Length: 284
Image (tube, rainbow, N blue to C red; front, side):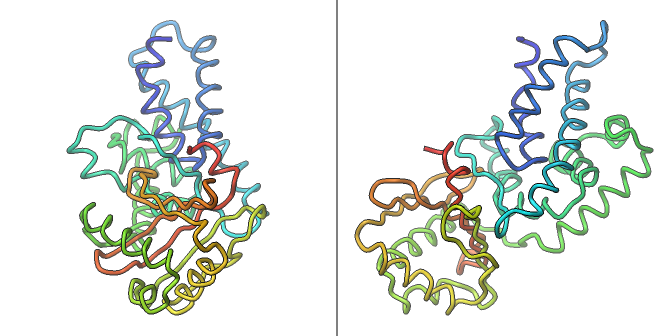
């Protein structure tokens, strides 16, 4: 148990990035623990390498199943938000890597196939050598290089290229919270870039946009309508979700929505609206 626990944080970080939900990641780790107890070789050169290989392969299998389930999901599917750190990092690492589990980044990962996603994460996030990746995926090393290259191109083509400080990010969140609470369209619209997009996930259980919404005027009118409906029952609280500042909205004291943003430091460019109560249940 002690040896497994020593690697658990890294294993969970890998499984969560592969699968996008805490439940699926926990299931993979439980399966890995059972196999660790009963099926590991008598002598291991590296227990960490063995466990990472096992978790990678289990995650690939689970992701193939999950993709079929998500194909019939009601509206857009967004990753499950996590409030606590995915894995411990030093302060320097937090500054450099906090966005590698952001909701925006995790959503981009959904565009990759299971093998592609695993190779990309192992190389780009966990800095694994290509020779080790080849063993973990049971592929040739040159094939793994191609997988990572293709995945990197697909991710970087749509990944935000803004270097925004956390203070600037938080300041924009505070301005949004004040404007969204008042519902003033003249204050809301300038907060959004001309190409802003909003993606919502209600899971078919609560009201949410079934397709992405585009444009500052449309988003401003949406939050104006929400403010009129909720009135003074609504309260916005800054919180940390998936390693970045976000907003939690409470209605009558109950967590109702989590908003995650991509900004350029001046305006909001992407809004991710997490409303599925099943995904919010583990937060607070």
